[in-house]
Length: 409
Image (cartoon, rainbow, N blue to C red):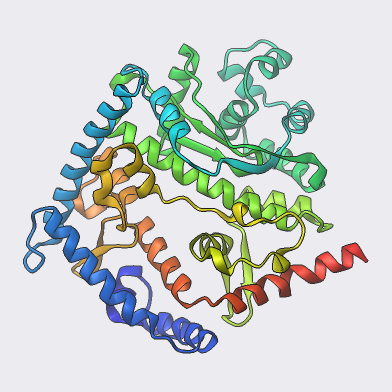
């Protein structure tokens, strides 16, 4: 692996080289890391020029400041566009929800039925959540609040023992407890929710919560005076990211729906990202990488490798940057920046809009900047460059088909 990629990703160069050697052996030594390094360097220089900076003489702090200013201006343009489309200037979350509805996103998922979730709440009543939401009876809360809203509060205010008792019920679920439906995006806006939203945002450090098993995204309300800079753009970005994660988890659950341990898979999915073990690489591969592989290389999709109900559209993945550009063309600057960064003292300065937005809305100084998402995106990009269709199919078949066959026998 080139030194640039190693430093951008932030791992040991020796260990990363060993991982890369395995990838090259499996894929036929295409030297994709060298080509990717060249592309990252050139694309980053082009973005610096777009910002009016000198690619040969720009420091990390200068780029960081320019990106913050760009995000500030883009947020103002996006807000104006959403308002012009009918959004309420005093209700940011309604505008964000309306914007999401205007985008051509693949919005269905394989999620827990609402009736099953309510039955689970009945068995393990979230009494602290009920108190926080101002209800005197559990039945009244269950009648008036969406399942996703109850879970958002319960997951935040109930004890670890309650969370364990609730998720222990997941282990007993089977595929018939799930259904195909639209991803739910809710934004509760009553006075009690506005007061509660501020506490939840302080606890979670951002205003978007998502629950993959129920296919829901919850946009937490904040009073106008508590809304951070670029609140609209940051909320929209995090919601788009959450919808991608829900779609990815959904296809993973579909793939395992005949497994006898389906419920345990659901339970694990609530705590960790689903992965496949790649024996050829001696390391796990995140399912989202497989999802993105087929989303990018649609012609490589072979339904025989998946069987059951997995279709090509189940493996979709929308670009956050392109979605923003559809809403407001001037945000096209961010297209292609997902895995771009500039090195400063051997550390990355991220051009990834999620990193930039989180740094900006939290008023983070340069030294505390967020870089996690560009590192993750770059690591995934390396894998995508090396993965071959036959190897991906072999990975899926070797881990999933034996279980499916044994169940059908």
